[in-house]
Image 1: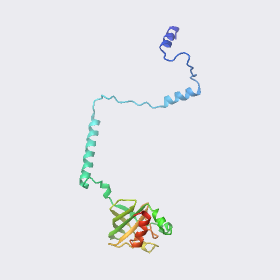
Image 2: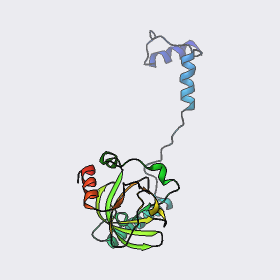
Image 3: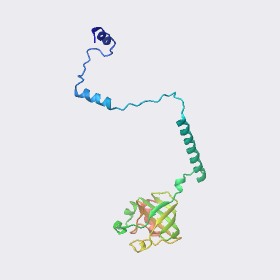
Length: 199
């Protein structure tokens, strides 16, 4: 580079000559260069690009989705969420029920993440269907389906589900709790639920 070109570049350089520069071989210069080189470049699409087939397909798919959602809402009635009508599925039998037993108290009852009162509407072998009369905590389903293998009523606090009867149920992680934390709805048991859950 000759002196004339150097002088011209110096005149148009916005940085005056008194600003200190760092050697390109220094550690911080190498780190800066490495950061610049490893940063991916993002190419922006031109805004005035003509619309292609992909845009037409995307618009058609969005319109179909809107129609499907609108139809589902219309069929569910009054704009209610169809998922809200889905039944809750719990199991009332496990491999190690006795390992979960702790002494019943209102304080322990209050720790249960799910609690409701329901009436058995159907018993078909191990399948028990309950209509939820009242949610104390942890849910909003109107129907609960239980997988309740026969013979569990022999366990401590086991529940003999009978059609037409009302029960107070607690559950944890999809599993109905036994040992006195679930059972037939009696005035005393319901009073414990009301005390535990404030209802």
